[in-house]
Amino acid sequence: MDFSNIKTYSDEVIEEAVSTLTKEELIAFPTETVYGLGADATSDNAISLIYSFKNRPKINPLICHVINKEMAYRYCYETKLSNLLAKTFWPGPVTMILNQKKNNGISKLVTANLDSIAVRHPKNNIFEEIICKFDKPVAAPSANISGNVSPTTAMHVYEEFGKKLELIIDGGASEKGIESTVIDARGDNPIIFRHGPITTEMIENKLNLKVLSNLKIDTVESPGQLFKHYSPNKKLIINSLKVGKHSSYLGFKNMMPDKQFKGEALNLSENGNLEEAAANLFTMIRYLDKNKSKNIMVAPIPHDGIGIAINDRLERAAQ
Ligand code: TXA
Ligand code: MG
Image (tube, rainbow, N blue to C red):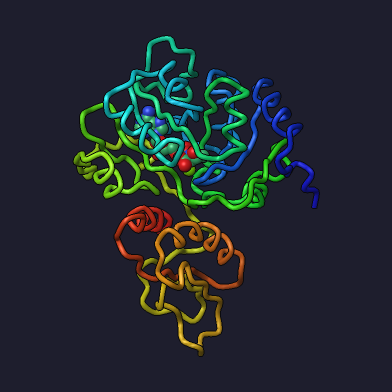
């Protein structure tokens, strides 16, 4: 196989990334959460390519990645809450939903014609250098065909798009392993639209603010939550206390099959560390999806901290 489009960091590769964005084409790169498929957020042509490459529904808006809050505020209105969140969690896995400024130059395809926009300052040296040199927001969803398991390595991106992408930058395995926490920052209190590595407890403790329940959110406000997501080819069966004969098993802590089990079993975290489980989640699901078993059974994962986000992804993957 020809992997010549997978490249590691160098000054030339950063130059190539910036010039590819300038040509209104797509690049794939690491972030601390999952790998992203990025394009110039101000270019209709480039953003159309993202939707067609991914086969993504056009009503599902994209996140604009920025290098600091000042870049974000060129395009949207700041709030007291957005300043607090940026100060506390940026760079990092927090995406904020804010009101857009009129005629801000961002492609309407990025925001799916909503009045709001999603902004995030990622924590990854390679990607930060690209945004800084490009000096415009980079719109980027996860670098997978819509509905598939999100990629956490450059090889996963290659499995999705192969040589169709001219440049996949390899920055090693993504540290967090699941997508950013999406927070509505337009009001006085944060509202979580998508659970992620920054948890409700972390926000409440650091900001001393109540996070509002997101149970009643209108799906139109958070379109990404409407779709089938994170799904392997095989059936995924969650909260499994036992493993079937023709299954693979994704365990957690001491929840693992006994020695008689002949199939393949992996442990998300032997010592029950939920951060480690999140970092392993998509990689292990992709791995078990490739063996001969009929389905993948997953141990119950505690609904604490980042466990909430892990369970959210597993429930969607099992739909
Ligand atoms: O960690 C991440 O967030 C990764 C990396 C690449 O940054 N990106 C990512 O993008 O997960 P994506 O496209 O897979 O998910 C973006 C989520 C979707 O659920 C989408 O509906 C939501 O953000 N979103 C984007 N703009 C929005 C808006 N204006 N209002 C509400 N939700 C929005
Ligand atoms: Mg995604």
